[in-house]
Image (cartoon, rainbow, N blue to C red):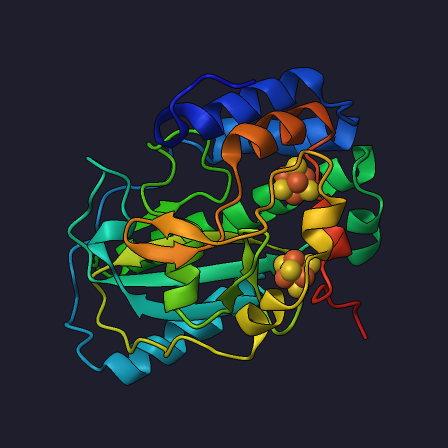
Length: 274
Ligand code: SF4
Ligand code: SF4
Protein backbone atom coordinates (compact mmCIF):
# COMPACT_ATOMS: atom_id res chain seq x y z
CA UNK A 1 0.00 0.00 0.00
CA UNK A 2 1.16 3.51 -0.84
CA UNK A 3 2.74 5.19 2.19
CA UNK A 4 3.18 8.77 1.04
CA UNK A 5 1.27 11.76 2.44
CA UNK A 6 -1.83 12.18 0.28
CA UNK A 7 -1.76 15.93 -0.10
CA UNK A 8 1.95 16.24 -0.76
CA UNK A 9 3.13 13.72 -3.32
CA UNK A 10 0.21 11.65 -4.49
CA UNK A 11 -0.02 13.02 -8.04
CA UNK A 12 3.71 12.90 -8.58
CA UNK A 13 3.79 9.34 -7.27
CA UNK A 14 0.89 8.26 -9.49
CA UNK A 15 2.38 9.69 -12.66
CA UNK A 16 5.87 8.43 -11.96
CA UNK A 17 4.52 4.91 -11.42
CA UNK A 18 2.20 5.26 -14.39
CA UNK A 19 5.09 6.22 -16.63
CA UNK A 20 6.94 3.11 -15.52
CA UNK A 21 4.11 0.60 -15.63
CA UNK A 22 1.87 1.75 -18.44
CA UNK A 23 2.03 -0.22 -21.69
CA UNK A 24 2.46 3.14 -23.30
CA UNK A 25 1.85 3.40 -27.04
CA UNK A 26 4.06 5.51 -29.32
CA UNK A 27 1.24 8.00 -29.71
CA UNK A 28 0.97 8.36 -25.94
CA UNK A 29 4.72 8.81 -25.65
CA UNK A 30 4.59 11.69 -28.14
CA UNK A 31 1.83 13.43 -26.19
CA UNK A 32 3.75 12.96 -22.97
CA UNK A 33 6.90 14.43 -24.54
CA UNK A 34 4.93 17.43 -25.79
CA UNK A 35 3.71 18.05 -22.25
CA UNK A 36 7.22 17.79 -20.82
CA UNK A 37 9.03 19.83 -23.48
CA UNK A 38 6.56 22.46 -24.69
CA UNK A 39 4.00 22.85 -21.90
CA UNK A 40 5.59 22.42 -18.47
CA UNK A 41 7.37 25.68 -17.74
CA UNK A 42 5.02 27.76 -19.90
CA UNK A 43 2.25 28.17 -17.32
CA UNK A 44 3.23 31.79 -16.65
CA UNK A 45 5.10 34.52 -18.52
CA UNK A 46 5.66 38.23 -18.99
CA UNK A 47 2.60 40.50 -18.99
CA UNK A 48 2.35 42.97 -21.87
CA UNK A 49 1.95 46.66 -21.13
CA UNK A 50 -1.80 47.26 -20.96
CA UNK A 51 -2.97 49.34 -23.92
CA UNK A 52 -6.38 50.03 -22.39
CA UNK A 53 -8.36 49.03 -19.36
CA UNK A 54 -10.77 46.25 -20.32
CA UNK A 55 -13.28 47.27 -17.69
CA UNK A 56 -16.42 45.84 -19.27
CA UNK A 57 -16.71 42.42 -17.60
CA UNK A 58 -19.60 41.34 -19.85
CA UNK A 59 -17.58 41.94 -23.02
CA UNK A 60 -14.47 40.35 -21.50
CA UNK A 61 -16.49 37.26 -20.54
CA UNK A 62 -17.87 36.80 -24.05
CA UNK A 63 -14.38 37.29 -25.49
CA UNK A 64 -12.80 34.73 -23.14
CA UNK A 65 -15.50 32.11 -23.55
CA UNK A 66 -15.49 32.40 -27.36
CA UNK A 67 -11.69 32.23 -27.39
CA UNK A 68 -11.61 29.13 -25.16
CA UNK A 69 -14.11 27.34 -27.39
CA UNK A 70 -12.27 28.46 -30.55
CA UNK A 71 -9.04 27.08 -29.11
CA UNK A 72 -10.77 23.70 -28.73
CA UNK A 73 -12.22 23.47 -25.21
CA UNK A 74 -15.59 21.72 -25.07
CA UNK A 75 -16.86 23.49 -21.95
CA UNK A 76 -15.91 26.77 -20.28
CA UNK A 77 -17.17 28.39 -17.10
CA UNK A 78 -16.04 31.19 -14.80
CA UNK A 79 -15.99 31.62 -11.03
CA UNK A 80 -14.50 33.87 -8.39
CA UNK A 81 -11.28 32.34 -7.10
CA UNK A 82 -11.75 30.55 -3.78
CA UNK A 83 -8.48 30.86 -1.84
CA UNK A 84 -9.10 27.50 -0.14
CA UNK A 85 -8.83 25.74 -3.51
CA UNK A 86 -5.19 26.72 -3.92
CA UNK A 87 -2.64 24.19 -2.76
CA UNK A 88 -1.10 25.35 0.49
CA UNK A 89 1.73 27.79 -0.16
CA UNK A 90 0.82 28.12 -3.88
CA UNK A 91 -1.71 30.94 -3.71
CA UNK A 92 -1.87 33.56 -6.48
CA UNK A 93 -3.33 37.03 -6.15
CA UNK A 94 -5.92 36.36 -8.87
CA UNK A 95 -9.64 37.10 -8.65
CA UNK A 96 -11.18 34.90 -11.33
CA UNK A 97 -10.90 31.28 -12.42
CA UNK A 98 -11.71 30.12 -15.95
CA UNK A 99 -12.50 26.40 -15.89
CA UNK A 100 -11.99 24.43 -19.10
CA UNK A 101 -13.16 20.90 -19.88
CA UNK A 102 -12.36 18.64 -22.81
CA UNK A 103 -14.20 15.46 -23.69
CA UNK A 104 -12.41 12.10 -23.87
CA UNK A 105 -13.44 9.73 -26.66
CA UNK A 106 -16.35 7.52 -25.58
CA UNK A 107 -15.20 4.31 -27.28
CA UNK A 108 -11.62 4.60 -26.07
CA UNK A 109 -12.75 5.07 -22.48
CA UNK A 110 -15.03 2.04 -22.89
CA UNK A 111 -11.82 0.05 -23.46
CA UNK A 112 -10.47 0.87 -19.98
CA UNK A 113 -8.24 -0.37 -18.50
CA UNK A 114 -5.96 -0.73 -21.50
CA UNK A 115 -3.52 1.14 -23.74
CA UNK A 116 -6.19 2.85 -25.94
CA UNK A 117 -7.92 4.48 -22.96
CA UNK A 118 -4.58 5.34 -21.33
CA UNK A 119 -3.48 6.97 -24.59
CA UNK A 120 -6.73 8.91 -24.73
CA UNK A 121 -6.17 10.19 -21.19
CA UNK A 122 -2.65 11.48 -21.96
CA UNK A 123 -3.81 12.87 -25.33
CA UNK A 124 -6.49 14.98 -23.68
CA UNK A 125 -4.06 16.09 -20.96
CA UNK A 126 -1.83 17.32 -23.77
CA UNK A 127 -4.47 18.97 -25.99
CA UNK A 128 -6.20 20.65 -23.07
CA UNK A 129 -2.82 21.64 -21.65
CA UNK A 130 -2.09 23.49 -24.89
CA UNK A 131 -5.44 25.26 -24.79
CA UNK A 132 -4.97 26.27 -21.15
CA UNK A 133 -1.50 27.68 -21.86
CA UNK A 134 -2.65 29.54 -25.00
CA UNK A 135 -5.60 31.10 -23.19
CA UNK A 136 -3.43 32.33 -20.31
CA UNK A 137 -0.85 33.64 -22.76
CA UNK A 138 -3.52 35.56 -24.70
CA UNK A 139 -4.73 37.21 -21.49
CA UNK A 140 -1.17 38.27 -20.61
CA UNK A 141 -0.82 39.68 -24.14
CA UNK A 142 -3.65 42.11 -23.42
CA UNK A 143 -2.02 43.23 -20.21
CA UNK A 144 -3.52 41.14 -17.41
CA UNK A 145 -1.84 38.48 -15.27
CA UNK A 146 -2.90 34.91 -16.01
CA UNK A 147 -1.61 31.51 -14.92
CA UNK A 148 -2.32 28.25 -16.77
CA UNK A 149 -2.95 25.46 -14.26
CA UNK A 150 -2.06 22.39 -16.29
CA UNK A 151 -4.57 19.49 -16.46
CA UNK A 152 -1.83 16.95 -15.73
CA UNK A 153 -0.67 18.45 -12.48
CA UNK A 154 1.98 16.04 -11.36
CA UNK A 155 3.81 18.84 -9.55
CA UNK A 156 2.41 21.92 -7.92
CA UNK A 157 4.51 24.22 -10.03
CA UNK A 158 2.37 23.17 -13.02
CA UNK A 159 -1.01 23.66 -11.32
CA UNK A 160 -1.61 25.55 -8.13
CA UNK A 161 -5.35 25.21 -7.79
CA UNK A 162 -7.68 22.22 -7.50
CA UNK A 163 -9.49 21.78 -10.82
CA UNK A 164 -12.56 19.88 -9.67
CA UNK A 165 -13.96 22.17 -6.94
CA UNK A 166 -13.09 25.18 -9.11
CA UNK A 167 -15.00 23.70 -12.07
CA UNK A 168 -17.98 23.05 -9.79
CA UNK A 169 -17.90 26.73 -8.71
CA UNK A 170 -17.66 27.68 -12.40
CA UNK A 171 -20.91 25.87 -13.17
CA UNK A 172 -19.50 23.03 -15.29
CA UNK A 173 -21.13 20.25 -13.31
CA UNK A 174 -21.48 18.49 -9.97
CA UNK A 175 -19.29 16.25 -7.85
CA UNK A 176 -20.12 12.56 -8.30
CA UNK A 177 -19.59 9.65 -5.94
CA UNK A 178 -16.59 8.67 -8.07
CA UNK A 179 -14.83 11.83 -6.88
CA UNK A 180 -14.88 13.51 -10.31
CA UNK A 181 -16.83 16.29 -11.94
CA UNK A 182 -19.99 15.06 -13.65
CA UNK A 183 -21.07 17.29 -16.51
CA UNK A 184 -24.54 17.30 -18.10
CA UNK A 185 -22.98 17.03 -21.57
CA UNK A 186 -20.50 14.15 -21.13
CA UNK A 187 -20.95 12.82 -17.60
CA UNK A 188 -17.52 12.36 -15.93
CA UNK A 189 -15.75 11.66 -19.27
CA UNK A 190 -13.76 14.94 -19.29
CA UNK A 191 -10.38 16.29 -18.23
CA UNK A 192 -10.08 19.72 -16.63
CA UNK A 193 -7.75 22.69 -16.82
CA UNK A 194 -7.94 26.11 -15.18
CA UNK A 195 -6.70 29.63 -15.92
CA UNK A 196 -6.67 32.17 -13.11
CA UNK A 197 -6.48 35.88 -13.86
CA UNK A 198 -7.36 39.41 -12.81
CA UNK A 199 -9.09 40.28 -16.07
CA UNK A 200 -12.55 41.48 -14.92
CA UNK A 201 -15.08 38.72 -15.69
CA UNK A 202 -18.64 37.70 -14.83
CA UNK A 203 -18.82 34.48 -12.77
CA UNK A 204 -21.27 31.72 -13.68
CA UNK A 205 -23.57 30.11 -11.14
CA UNK A 206 -22.88 26.60 -9.82
CA UNK A 207 -25.06 24.05 -11.59
CA UNK A 208 -27.52 21.60 -10.09
CA UNK A 209 -28.84 19.13 -12.62
CA UNK A 210 -29.47 16.29 -10.19
CA UNK A 211 -26.18 14.37 -10.57
CA UNK A 212 -25.17 14.40 -6.89
CA UNK A 213 -28.70 13.41 -5.93
CA UNK A 214 -28.61 10.57 -8.45
CA UNK A 215 -25.40 9.26 -6.86
CA UNK A 216 -27.27 8.79 -3.57
CA UNK A 217 -29.27 5.99 -5.20
CA UNK A 218 -26.57 4.53 -7.43
CA UNK A 219 -23.51 2.51 -6.48
CA UNK A 220 -22.29 1.17 -9.82
CA UNK A 221 -18.86 2.78 -9.46
CA UNK A 222 -18.51 1.35 -5.93
CA UNK A 223 -19.16 -2.15 -7.21
CA UNK A 224 -17.07 -1.88 -10.37
CA UNK A 225 -13.94 -0.26 -8.88
CA UNK A 226 -11.46 -3.09 -8.54
CA UNK A 227 -9.21 -0.88 -6.45
CA UNK A 228 -11.99 -0.65 -3.83
CA UNK A 229 -11.41 3.11 -3.79
CA UNK A 230 -14.92 4.53 -4.26
CA UNK A 231 -16.66 5.03 -0.91
CA UNK A 232 -20.07 3.69 0.07
CA UNK A 233 -20.59 6.58 2.47
CA UNK A 234 -19.74 10.27 2.66
CA UNK A 235 -17.01 11.42 5.01
CA UNK A 236 -16.03 14.77 6.51
CA UNK A 237 -13.58 16.60 4.23
CA UNK A 238 -12.46 20.04 5.42
CA UNK A 239 -15.79 20.50 7.20
CA UNK A 240 -17.94 19.26 4.28
CA UNK A 241 -19.71 15.93 4.04
CA UNK A 242 -18.78 14.41 0.70
CA UNK A 243 -17.71 11.26 -1.09
CA UNK A 244 -13.98 11.00 -0.99
CA UNK A 245 -12.29 8.49 -3.25
CA UNK A 246 -9.39 6.91 -1.36
CA UNK A 247 -6.25 8.09 -3.19
CA UNK A 248 -4.13 5.47 -1.41
CA UNK A 249 -6.22 2.82 -3.15
CA UNK A 250 -7.04 4.54 -6.45
CA UNK A 251 -3.54 5.95 -7.07
CA UNK A 252 -1.62 2.67 -7.18
CA UNK A 253 -4.40 1.00 -9.17
CA UNK A 254 -4.47 3.88 -11.67
CA UNK A 255 -0.70 3.64 -11.99
CA UNK A 256 -0.57 -0.15 -12.38
CA UNK A 257 -3.54 -0.62 -14.71
CA UNK A 258 -3.08 1.69 -17.69
CA UNK A 259 -4.43 4.88 -16.14
CA UNK A 260 -7.61 3.10 -14.98
CA UNK A 261 -10.77 4.89 -16.12
CA UNK A 262 -13.20 2.13 -15.18
CA UNK A 263 -15.34 4.37 -12.95
CA UNK A 264 -15.78 6.85 -15.84
CA UNK A 265 -16.65 4.03 -18.22
CA UNK A 266 -19.32 2.44 -16.02
CA UNK A 267 -20.81 5.64 -14.58
CA UNK A 268 -24.57 5.69 -15.09
CA UNK A 269 -24.24 9.36 -16.10
CA UNK A 270 -21.50 8.77 -18.70
CA UNK A 271 -23.08 10.10 -21.89
CA UNK A 272 -22.67 8.35 -25.24
CA UNK A 273 -22.20 10.96 -28.01
CA UNK A 274 -25.40 11.48 -30.04
S1 SF4 B 1 -9.82 5.17 -11.48
FE1 SF4 B 1 -10.06 2.94 -11.23
S2 SF4 B 1 -9.18 2.55 -9.19
FE2 SF4 B 1 -9.56 4.74 -9.29
S3 SF4 B 1 -11.62 5.02 -8.42
FE3 SF4 B 1 -11.89 4.81 -10.66
S4 SF4 B 1 -12.27 2.62 -10.98
FE4 SF4 B 1 -11.40 2.85 -8.93
S1 SF4 C 1 -21.75 5.32 -11.21
FE1 SF4 C 1 -23.58 6.06 -10.19
S2 SF4 C 1 -22.89 6.56 -8.09
FE2 SF4 C 1 -21.06 6.39 -9.35
S3 SF4 C 1 -20.67 8.51 -9.98
FE3 SF4 C 1 -21.86 7.54 -11.63
S4 SF4 C 1 -24.00 8.04 -11.14
FE4 SF4 C 1 -22.80 8.47 -9.31
